[in-house]
Every structure is written in C-alpha cells, then in structure tokens.
Image (cartoon, rainbow, N blue to C red; front, side):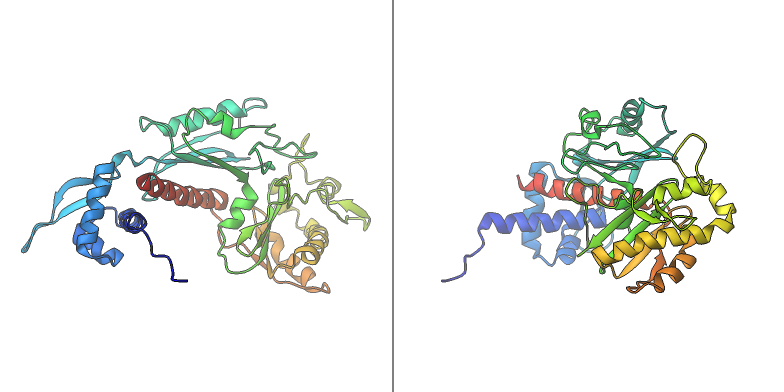
Length: 357
C-alpha cells in the first residue's frame, strides 16, 4: 500500500506552527529571518505570515530593517496572544505570576498564608492582582503544598498534614479568571519536574512537611488518586528503635512546632544531635522506596535536605540495595520554576492550536 500523502491543510498547519514557534523564541523577525530559523522557503514563510496575520495570531510591529538592500518588515506575536497564570500555595505564602508566550513573567503578586477558611478568597485575590487589564488567562497551573486529587484537582485532607488548606477546589475558584484548563498538582511533584530528566529517580522533600515524588520514564507517577509519595505515615525506625510512623519521629525528637504537626526547621538545623536518628528513620523509608520503585538515584531537596543528605547517603549506601543520595540541583523556588515551565509549554501549544483552528 502506497504511503498516504499529507494534505495541503496539514502542510499549511505545520508551516504556521514552525513560524509561530520561531517567533516565540525570537520575539520578532522578518520573513527572511523566519525562513532561516525554520528552514522553510521564503514563499512558504510569506504565505504562513499572511495566514497568521489574517487570523490575528501575528502582527506587523511597524519596525523595518535598515541599511542596504530590500527593506524587511518585523513580525511578532499579537498582543492579544494571552497569558498563563502560575500559582504557588506554599507554607511561606501564596505567589501568583502572569506569564506570556515569550516566557516573561509580566506580573507577580505575593500574599501571606491566610487564616483557616480563607484560602479560596486569598487565592482568588492574588490571581486577580496579576490579571490586570489583560483579560482572562488562557490557562493556569497551580502548585499546592497539600495532596491533590488526580481527577478533580481538589486538595485532599489527610491526617497529620501541617498545612491543612482544606478541600480547596482551585479550578472552581479561578473559573472566572481562566478561560481554559487549570492544572493542579502537589508541590513536591512539581519540584521533581524541575530536575533534569533522563534517569529514573525519587525526589525526597524535607521541609516543614515531608513528601516524595517518583519519576520513571521521565514522568511523575502520581498513583491512582494522585496521592503517591505521601510518606508521612510509612513505618520506619523510631529514636528508641521501635517501629514508628515517620511523622511521629519528629514528635518524639521534639522537632514539631507547638500545636502543629509542622516540622520546626530552624530547631532541627540547630539540633545536630538529632540528625543521626532522623537519617536512620529516613533511610528506613527510602529502603522501602528503593525496593518498590527501583530508582537510579534519590535526590534530596527542601530547607533541611542538604543538612541531612550526607548522613542519609552513608546509611542508604549500607543497605542491600544501595542507591546514591544526592542533593537536588534546583534550590530556588523549584516547584514554582517547574510549574512556570509547564504553563509556558501549555500556553504555546494553545496558541498553535488556536491558529490552526
């Protein structure tokens, strides 16, 4: 059977996508420059620019080339291309960013952690601050420091959570600000996505809360309900040698904040005599992780991850199935960094799809 030839519409759509993505990277370009960037012929680029201009996806910037030779016109994405909303719900506050198709953060707003029962209104307010006069966002990506239901995007209440935000329904809260999809995931999963791919690994987050993400075949494995990696209740070795839930190890060592299950990070960092007991408890959890998911390496992130990583490496290295333990590479806003990158990719895909339609 002879291979099916691509239709003219498909070829035009592919040409338009190449031109759009070239403009996303170059910000502005002449037709000659677009031909060089895409590898398409100049007549093909000219036709694509004409179609994209008629659809409103691309505009003439009004700028012209100077110097000898034929004057060239600079084209760019239309100002109406839209933006993506990126939100982080974390123990140290709420952050909202507006990101354009070039990858620029064009607006950013920060809000303190709200009082119980006011998370939804705080989320709505901080998102509205970066919306400005640009109209509704095309899409949104949310990182939350609580478990997230995979199907609905709602936050899930589990026992002993230090940052109980309630059953927050972020897609519903943001519905009037976002025209397209709202993607929500746990902050530890986002932090794992910030690391370089190419290998299977487990990402252990150690901060005021505890979390673990499993990355296999360059994808985060979220589990049936989206709750994979919630390690707080895994049984391990307690300070007295007895079987103890991981979260209760911190209570036994006096490392919780008063009246909360949140870990007192400054106190933990100062109490170096507790580090061997913590490393032993964490090594017990990682032994189970290694047995079940077979990672090539364990990456340790979070505020006190670097302090415990060397001792944890030594203990895990002594296990029957040893894997290296390394510090995470991205240490500044890793969850927000990955969420922002995902929002940018989704926004660009949405612009391409809209132009094709």
